[in-house]
Image 1 (cartoon, rainbow, N blue to C red):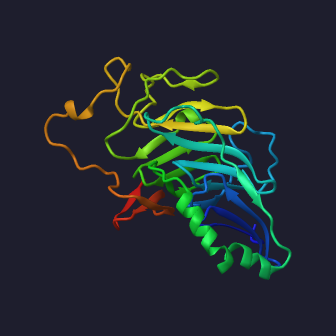
Image 2 (spheres, rainbow, N blue to C red):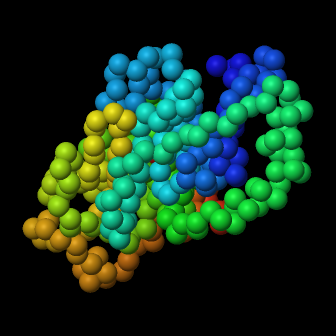
Image 3 (spheres, rainbow, N blue to C red):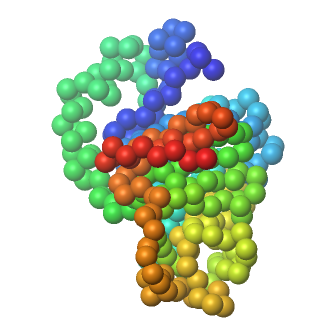
Length: 280
């Protein structure tokens, strides 16, 4: 809808503007208190597992926090789905929690709005908020792309490009990424399913656990190497023989993804080191 504009800020705010009247309608702050790295419209009529959600709901993908992209309904500020990646060192405690948007009261006059959010009186407070925000070592998503109504591509500081299948989460996979990866040998918690390591569709990092009760939370576990019987992690460096081909993966943070059509659809990715790659 060309009459609405949604923006995210480095302070973790999400602002909704009505362009017809140039009015700031609503302001939220992300529960992570971390910068909003990317905001993209959600093209699907409903997130995975929620067919009863009205097709007219204004849905957006928001990339903020640690390696996660969430779907928010801007009509009420509710989280509808979460796409999240985890390392093996991260405990499952709290991994199934949804991010939230905290409503910020919008003053009635535009002058008050700018003063309350961007003006000098709040500058010192904003610096204090940044200083007290705990630093996270988890990589964040910097780029998002919606190739179709039921798919999502994400990329970021972990140098991986991931494809999320919104209708069939088991088919989600890593398109490109470093050779090093992790495999979680923990038993899946109650109410979750786990992919079989011998599944022929399992290559590189895939969705290992998924909890389908709304709002949907999809967790991606890096698992690119398995033992002979699929029962543990195998070190790929010990199995290599002969020359090693150059990796097609990016070697720095991926900042943007775009779709182009040159004799067929292709994805273009650009990284912080200036390298641009084209994927067919």
